[in-house]
Image (cartoon, rainbow, N blue to C red; front, side, top):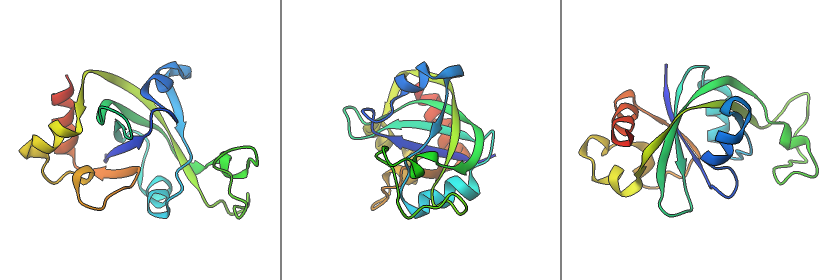
Length: 153
């Protein structure tokens, strides 16, 4: 089992949107970074743990945690000309972009803010706060995952 942090802008897809999804499960689409794509396609497995992080909002925070419900598969939005994530270079026979499905396990009563993460010595190496890391999908360690869960409960 591996652990991940997924960042999303709440105006695009929020934890509220996830809560409203059927069985609180939704696909994580629209990732258009090759490193993040490789992670989604090759590394993330069913059952992996995911921290759900809101970016580009106040407060920047982890709002809950999820479990991967379905491993990487082609992101259908790359083929939809009416979708913001359309990619005219993508081919159905050899898709460029991938996504996974996640299921909400628990929304935190107390969101874990970026400030709290930075202030916690146990999280000093978490990928989220490393300089230059802007990936929307990033690996974290089991101990970092567990520390954030503890902070959020």
